[in-house]
Image (tube, rainbow, N blue to C red; front, side):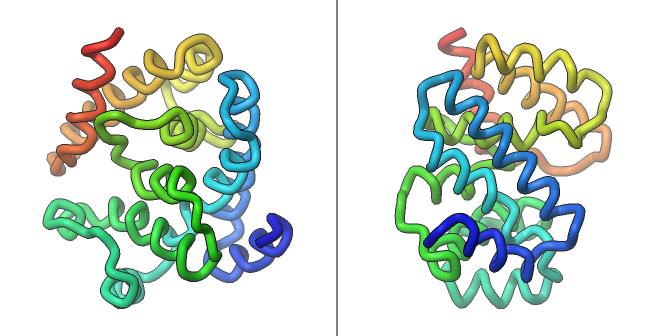
Length: 187
């Protein structure tokens, strides 16, 4: 499917702010793909669609998760903000006709990360975190680091995320811990 057609279709699933965020993640993903030698078209598509399930009401998320057999686990059921990754992967496949596994996995794991992330998965993970619309303490340092080392930027982002999750008293998904440990082994 042509990216302009996907943009039009995506507007039906996202509110205006989330759509703008998705465009910014797409642009940041293209920039990082160019910098790190990844496929720019795949980065654009994954960045654009990464949050395609984010604005759905919870009951619709659950209905679609069942319909499309999304990989939702017990932690995601408790931490509902994590459902949009696996559901987004299924929507990308079945609604937006994306068949490329690298794009699909980048969408699925963009919120949690995982062990052995591919280059594209790393790009989408960090692009979502540092896109220009993000404004939180420390984001500028992570933006700068992302232009030098994806792994170090992701480690910084994961550490920030874990601190935030702990401050809320929420559950940390094991994929996030696995991603952090995996990166630490090689940095």
